[in-house]
Image (cartoon, rainbow, N blue to C red; front, side, top):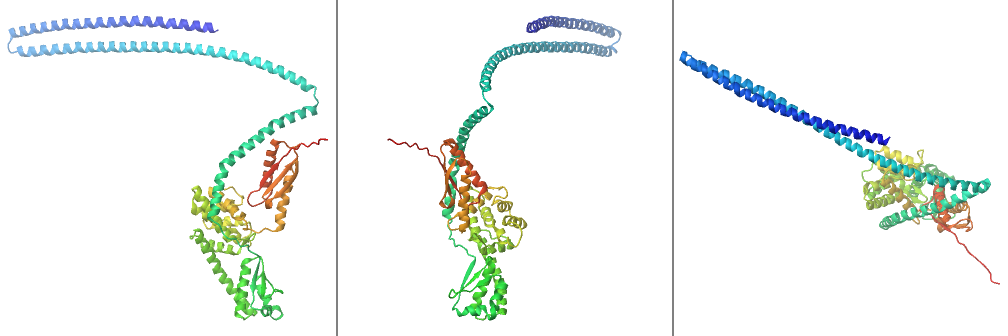
Length: 536
């Protein structure tokens, strides 16, 4: 088939060459004929011109002999006729010359077309040669692949013969063992590489940022309590506080909602209640009654109302002072009052207003180190917990309440998202939101910042050890450093070196998904193989 195609192309090429030669000869003959016609036309024009001039001379001579009056007129007419004749001859000559040029142009175009066709045929011939070589290479490659396939089939047949002699249980055990051996090392290697890479790139920068932020902002902590002590000038004042048949103390407790505890402790009255604002109103009222000396139900009612109004003013002042300290004096007046209420709100014994100010300052420091908007970061950190001021009065979590109020008072979208995401309820949409979450955790995790009950502390340690013990191959585990580290001893016969890394990774993931804790928890997995023998 290929030989037929090549022969056809050769005959086509010969036909084109012959056609080109014939057309060239015809073009040359046409050109010579055109030149001969042009030469004859020029000679005829000269002959006609001579005859015309001779006739004109004869007419002139005749006219001169006949009449001198008509001589001039006849001469002019003769010249005019000669001019017209000359113009007609020249016009005819130009027309024939134009036709010759057009014919020459067409012949040139046809010659160019033949050249192009010749070039196309050459290109097609090269393409056919290239395809022929490609087909030859593919044929050789197919032969090689067929040899490889035949070899693989032989190996597969031998493997099937070996496997055919095994039971289903043996085959499953072989497959599972090979898969586990192959994947265990690869997974452990990838985890180690990933952790090493992330640690190398992030540890130094994170430590520098946090250390710098903590060094630049170190605050004092005073653990808030749910009771307030009021000192008395003498124990006789206790009876006046109680009043006749207990009417004074009952009035004070009913108006403030705080329990007044009067016991054997000398010169001390204890005010107990979970609402710090009510407890503060009760303290102010009781101290005023003691200093004034007039203690009766009407006076108590008057002072409670007066102190409630005074405390509202103090709440606004607390909010203004905190907003000025954080650098956000343009807050809405309602937001300032809400933030002032946080002065009397605690979280694990930590004053929430001071915590909010500290988070704002830490977020501002971190934002400045990373080139973010410092003022916006401070404002977002300051407002992140404002929902705690009214979470006892409005349904919903403090995150939902704070987010709703931030939208209501037209706060910046970054501030709104920061409030909504600082506990992980929604995804953070900005770097500032992440920084505020880090600053919040940092402020809460400082030693002495928060007061945890012994029950919660023991429960966290127990949960850590239960999570570690839930994995196969764990021999012993111990929670250390107040629950900030878990050490796991594994059985060396069940867990190899590669599986140690995977086990630490799995324990870390389970702790993150199941426990709520401040700061970081270090997971340490220990595997030790001992060989003991006795010489006798």
